Amino acid sequence: MIFISNKIKILTLAVLQTGIVWTSAQSVAKNKTETTAKAESGKIVPANLNWSERMLLSEMHRFPESWMLDFSKSPKWTYPAAIVLDGAEQLYAKTGKKEYYDYISNFGEKLVKEDGTILTYELEKYNIDLLNSGNVLLYLYEKEKKEKYLKALQTLRLQIKGQPRTNEGSFWHKKIYPYQVWLDGLYMGMPFYAHYTNDFSKGNDAAKAYDDIVFQFDSVQKNLLDKKTGLLYHAWDESRQQAWADKQTGLSPNFWGRAMGWYGMAMVDVLDYLPQNHPGRARLISYIRFFADAIIKVQDKENGLWYQVLDKAGEKGNYTEASASAMFVYTMIKSVNKGYLPQSYKVYAKKGYDGIIKNLITIDENGVVNLNKSCAVAGLGGKPYRDGSYDYYINEKIRSNDSKATGPFILASIEFEKK
Figure (cartoon, rainbow, N blue to C red):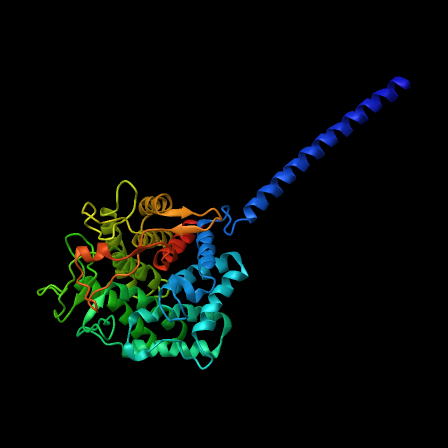
């Protein structure tokens, strides 16, 4: 009995010791986890999140109120914020994180007065850039049903009705740029036009609007496409009056990366709202295929990125540019996910995406993500006069964390993160 009792004691002690060891190991693991979590939580942007959230949180840190996006000094109705907020809408739907919704809502609250007037917006200027942020109001009206958003949206729809057009029916880019069609304008105006039509128009009114939207792309393909390369020129002057315009064709002289980027995003985003049975869908999808084939030819074979002036990679001063690269990646990966492009195109989108992360992104010690080497702005005409030359494009200001780059990067990341 004594022998058995001792054996039980030994076994009990062994179990207790094992328990102590296990408890100790569990405690160490717990402390390690807590230490890691504490270290990670000490960062403004945790590294264990997906790139989409890391970039959005970085933008929210840089620009605490959404009207500040793209370095705005005071609340102003401009287009770049809407691109980042498009990503915020999708991330809110995916994560349910209220801070993302609040960030979007802040834009509407600050920019739209209670009577529906839009801060700093002037309808009579007929600037197509200013339609893009209407997408934020469409989202907020769907969510909140505030009358002020409806009134503001109706004002923006009036702009479309009165927007000056070329003789064949393409929208002028701005009233101050007569007879000029810019690739930028397709992104600035057409997704909003399609989204508004989807939400508010019925019957013949809707049919006419959708036909008009598709026509804008048809006209661009006809007038701005270079058949040799498949690339599209930045702009076209129907009147041939501008110094930058070729006297025979009316075309500007170069293929600017971001202009092509705007055009690609315009096509994939319009298709979100164009009815499945609309005959123009097939044409838009064919344009996307031609577009993708053309940009793949000028994609840098080593780093996967695209240049400020697309077809002049080796020329002095040209550089791999962030906004165009992010826009092309977004256009291709979304097109693959939606079935507009075959799966084989994903490899080019992934090469571009990896190239952005490897070559253009830097991360601060606090976890904040920066996207570098974006052209701040480029256009044609105006004062001082922008002549559309190669030297003009490569000498425009380059900066980091431009919303015209961070926004498309967030959108591209969301597409890659889809299961």
